[in-house]
Length: 389
Image (cartoon, rainbow, N blue to C red):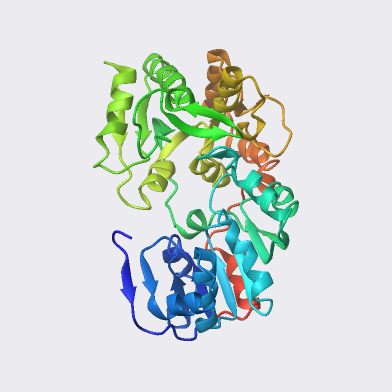
């Protein structure tokens, strides 16, 4: 593997093992680093001792490499923020004495990179032939637990978003700024290329991101008419000129500011300083809502896509899997400029007390905000993990 390093050091015992380096930095702010190890599963490194043990067992796969590595470490707890790795839910059957914890790291849907590869589709398919389990699955909100529970035998705990909870942001805002959360993809070969699949239906880049074009063009007009500063919160860093160009081409001479995301906290800083946040269906948008920021959810991607492929795509509607109306005080699933204006006008004028009461009806189900990750820390401590102070 290109970029993969070989480790010749025998893995030593650790109290806690982090499954997947992605997200490990956040967990290592909670777990005692001296008692915690990290298992690379994306080819960053391979351990020679684990490879030899896997080969001797004559079972050659990433999952069997993983189990070989774990057999050296002998952890009390295995924890991951990669809740979409379905192999993680196979570990409990192999190591029943080890406590396993999965932490949801993003909003879920059944879009996937290949045909019929959506997360819950894949999870259900595997669960039909294999017992999937974990000791705990920590979810962003309470509603999505039902979807995991249908496939995975586990206890559930609502903890919110790990990164959102861990960042301390001073909540001040400009009265004259509206922030749009970009979801621009890491690559875009051409408009007709397949970007994602919904079940067996291929979806082109131009179809999937038609929602961004429609919304940003409306926002530019709205902001100019109302003398509001339009700022675009970039998904990618400064090296990704394509993202900025995408919005420049869409808006022409309409004024806007584009701010790339160069550090893990940049997007959250933009959220904190803005009076109104607009998103389509991003995790960051739900995190903004959890922080009680005035957030407009223009969740139109599902219906736009559905109109093209001819099948319902409800899991991109606002609040899924809750069955909510297509429109509400701060959301719409319908691509209507009248609806967009209604929602923004509401967010501009609603009192803080009324806004707090309104979002309080939904945050427990959709995404909670737990500053300092107190609920997760309490769980890990109860399971026997040593934590940082």
